[in-house]
Length: 609
Image 1 (cartoon, helix red, strand yellow):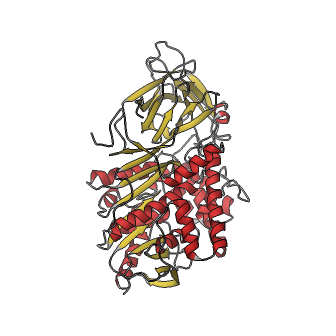
Image 2: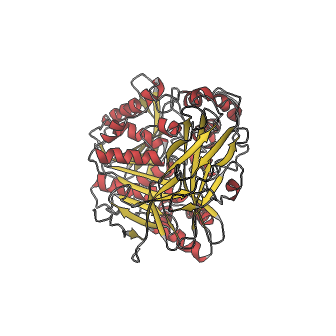
Image 3: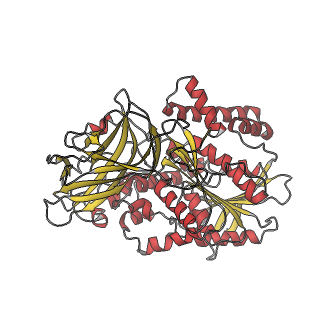
């Protein structure tokens, strides 16, 4: 057993100073977690205002460094804009180069982005790194921003990235030390370079991204409509407003305040791009209709597990419990570990992107590159895995993920209970109807642009197409840390159906808050009338549930548009073109012969925890 992984006790730390500043201040004034996150945005805005008033870059840097616990910035920055970089096929991509004034032979950090090389998703990171002695190259990928060509997501990043590294080799200012940086899609472009192991790449910093995106869209067996259509809308609106410098992060954080909601209910799904943007978005249609991982698009555009496992440079990975990419980030981590690499993994408690996480990534990226590009002591913890436990916001450290935890099963019962023992009676099944014309909505959880992923589940649990099962009040605190799973015995009267399982805790006031959930598409085996033992994995999680609270499991057959509603017939490729819908009658069994249950990695904290 590793020194960080000592069940039943395990090491936890006080957290980043930035996190502590926000949390402590918000507790003192009585802010909830949601308001705390909004307060963090307000603090960031105030810092920007103070910086603008102060004017000089040294003053601005001192403010940011003090507030966000960053190393002091020692350099002014000169920016060379629109530097041409020719690709193998003659297409020219354009980059901005951030040069730290007075730095002798600074190491280089490369960022390749579809969101605008001067946009808010790029420039703050580039400026922060340049002020601390890095020469930063921020490049618009093919078909975006100032760069030539046609943007086809994922397809050109490996070859174009390699061409860019070759161009760097020919520059007199390049000293042979290269770091790769990127969040989300920008991180994919970094991975696409790293998998070929250029000798110059000394460090890779890639939060909230993954090696390939087929699994993001189809891992559940259904189509991730939320991620695909939201991204199509964001990219189209960004293109229309490219002169304003509006970035994807601003779009994500402003969800709910857009001038028009995204029409997720449009049918057929394959043509929802027109309803959402007024025009055809080629990459969206590719995502919606190429359901086979062996199709030419996914085969040519994805990085394989062997590719990611072969990266030899040190890799920093990060995600969050409600990040829509979380399972894939963990899969990349596992691939690297299985290959004998030593990646770092950090998991926070928010959605795909939020302000506290962005600040943490900025701080950690400086520390990561300072160590691997400049040879300085690593100022981060030496724990390979660091996660934030929800419920008390403690940071925990482990040697690996998932940590070893005893697994405990809780069984569904006919009266709506959730028990440690299998029901001994032959009670009949619980019945509900899933109607795709009024689909069970995805409320909270890992949506691409979620701002408040943890919600009061009352609206969801009150629907006639959901059923809930609840424990008695807990006698003591419990920690759920790892990867829950469920096996539900289910019968459906249609050939295909989805199964959604959500784990929540119910507080002392009776408010139900979601912890984690999972959804998967199934196909009926044999004739109707025979229940299927449907197994599915829930999202990985870490939370402390307090004594006096209860656990609750919600079962349903949809989470639209997180996964496009199941229309009742056909596979995802066929459903992409359908406009007709069939309601599905569902029966959930929970008797001695059909012990439906949820399986939790659960342990009781020791007094030291």
